[in-house]
Length: 137
Image (cartoon, rainbow, N blue to C red; front, top):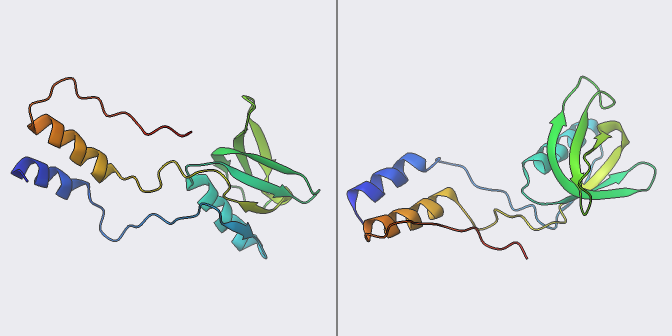
């Protein structure tokens, strides 16, 4: 491996960080703290989640934002519902649990792997290097 490739990889590695595999996990909150913890994990998740509400309904979609207030009623998640371009907000106080139902688009992927492929192509003399993401289908 070239010195350039090695130095770039050294700069991009975060020691001690491991991506938690949440795909398929169901999160039932028994307390306010557990609910907040689950919603933070859902916010960081790179796939769809299914939100279970107190009224028995569910909504599946991608969480793109959350607003954290002092109480559950003052806090909400914002998501793009699956199959619907409209954004919706759901107060934390209406949520009983969630499930990580969508495919984690970053599972098995890493910035280091992407960067390594890029530098391998660059050092091999390739030009117009285009690294395309894997299809989600």
